[in-house]
Image (cartoon, rainbow, N blue to C red; front, top):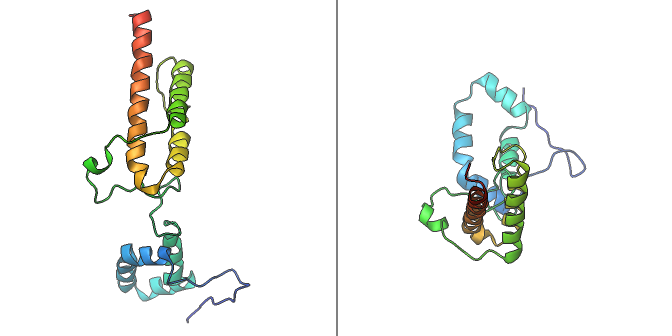
Length: 171
């Protein structure tokens, strides 16, 4: 029994554009593992696999992990944040961060420091939203360095608030 889904352009299934950067990234990063997995399937596993779309479905799902340029997307949909194959010296570098983003970070740290009485609990922070928005606002090649730099500002602002409170009230 061989079931295949081959609906036209009006159907729910679409063909894979093998010339797309997303497909080429999947081909480069995952295709050999997909093929190896298929080779190890029993006949029953293969029947179920094919029933649910087989290799095309797997490839389409992997393609969602890449942007239209074939760059891997992190969990927040930001390309350029993968450190695989890079040493920290390549991205732990200070770069210019605009005054607007430094101010955004300062305001967030201040608001959360006051709101949580100086205790960073992680439950109410808006850090992820701020960092994600910042990352999407700059060039892909600067995202790792810029994120690290913005993190250095965040640390400095937290320390400044802590020092100010400690100076006013040593206890």
